[in-house]
Image (cartoon, rainbow, N blue to C red; front, side):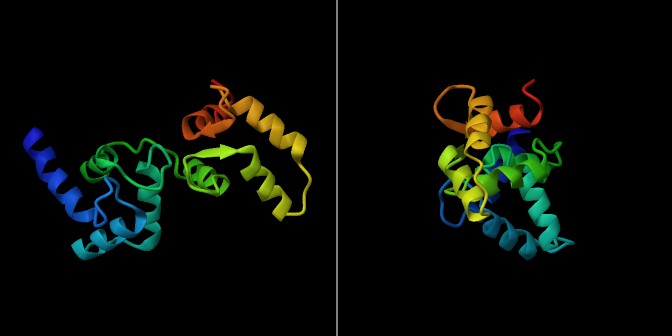
Length: 142
């Protein structure tokens, strides 16, 4: 297993063209299309979102390894997409300002709802909802 993992680490490094330790969707798309097979844009998007377990917008090596070895997907792609839609600056957390901006753009005054969402979801009290906190909120706080 470790020899196989070493081979996949080499593949990961080759796919990680900007060498930031993460494979973004464009890098994954380019790599998978070069490998051939039935990799449509939709299939790549769904795979990427399913294995981006922390909704960071990039696959780290462990997430990539799970994808290529067929391990069960750790994330619900719909929840990943919903989280990313609210995380406007892409920093891995949702803030009240980001949510307020979304509602303002839609012409809706929802300050009370935004405050409630942050209060319920921000489990560590830092004023931000991380993806893990978002998952707990989506599951009903379990």
